[in-house]
Length: 411
Image 1 (cartoon, rainbow, N blue to C red):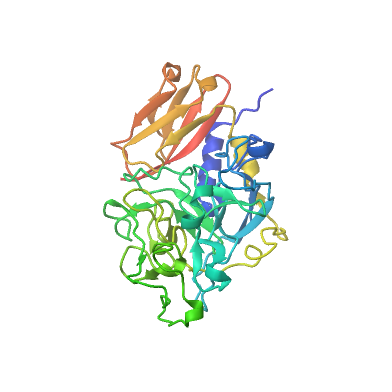
Image 2: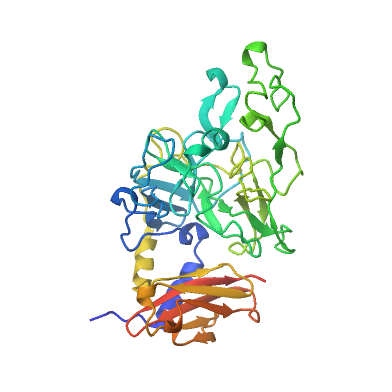
């Protein structure tokens, strides 16, 4: 007999989860055993948390890679990494020596894909002075989502993950799209103009820029190089091909030297430090792309460097994945944009499009919107223009099943 979960119970469960850190609730968890490239399970496999940490287990294979895909100009292919990353739930600013973002994974997208720093691990004449910009030297090996595997078969991106959120939607605050290993969130490219959560939605501008140089003989910090350590001629490789072609100018843009700022966001109404991916007017990635050269916060051991990403849980934890699985069922649908300001579009899987109705509830459990006969269309638009800021729950129901999504309204 099918287990019935009452709406009141669901509300208690979901709003209890809503009080959890977004570092617990924001991950794209594979609760349906979906497989992708080379029949590997996709996205995050499970999430467990304690009072201090969240553990994220991932194959590092996103659901955006088509089965059998062959990366252009790239002899490698991705494999399941079976990483378990440990991320603090109480991030703190690092007041000591800054930690550089090393090679390998430096952070994690919310679907469990590794984020790498801007370098491609090569330098001019192997001198470790002028480092190659991966976006310049390796972009012909990227897939349509701007990711690729390396020689260790670890799939990763260096820049804006354009298949993970809508990079063109500049009408609402971008969603959380990942977390850095210091515990702070990564958002898409758009945020409130003012750090207190007011003002119009605007594209976050990096404070890095291309240097005004005619040769590569001086580093950004002013170091004058000897001739053995000069970089290549600009006629050989254009400005921007090397990391040292960029300089940080305080106050030039919206973001600091780490490519973030302390600000109010929809998920953190009291404010948080947050990183932002940076793109230009043409929606192309802009250096430093995700993080600056150093972290803002303190880093726990186990996530950086060789053989990292295999943390062992040695404390009592709660399985967040199990809770999500119990509340999910067979109605497959998506909503966008979310967060939203005045309209919500609901897309229902065609196989679920018969005899479905929808209700939108506020935090007190009151119905503020209803839609019946969802079968008339697989795509429905719900006006939210008269609703206040806050968190709502959208419930879709059929004769046998019920599924709920959390909706955030931001004016």
